[in-house]
Length: 248
Image (cartoon, rainbow, N blue to C red):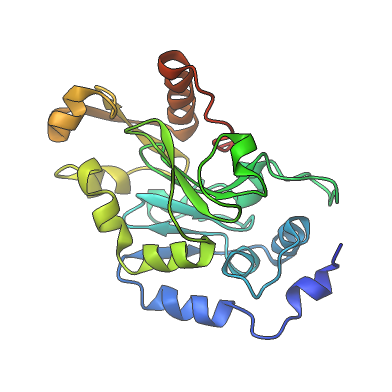
């Protein structure tokens, strides 16, 4: 078990490079402020160093809001954004989403995978734990996976957290979400708070939505509601439990 100094006082910390990547991002990204004390507590619980991109992000910022609020990448607990665009308000922390204990617990582990981001459609980005198969997820240990709301399945992304984050910042979302965005999506996602998502009817996995997404009916709902609906249909239609999707 490493103490906080070992995790933070490292050679070649990742934050300077990550900060430069954020400044040069090909998509709009808002960097939320962090609370230093709570950030260090989150890093200690995770037992990762500031040399990693995940450790650097958690230690130095309260999360990222990308592409007009379409995607939230979680960081450390922070003071939030009491003013400004709605999408910067109410974004939860990585600790809250994953149920970190209030005080450091050396025996605590994430529930199969660490949920690191959500999109406004209820898609879930997670970092695989040591044994993904036990948790019913594809991919290798330490690989990023995505729970797709249009298929109700987990998909392996073939990369770890650092390359995944670089892919987001260099425009990877544009092709990834090509079939899941409709004319005017940016205005709809930009009007949400950081704890809301967009409910689509008929559902994204339906033949009707796949045939004409622009013709669907859409409304803002709590993101927790979207995750609950996705879980319900996984179990109802396929008798599959998708596992932990994050607490929001």
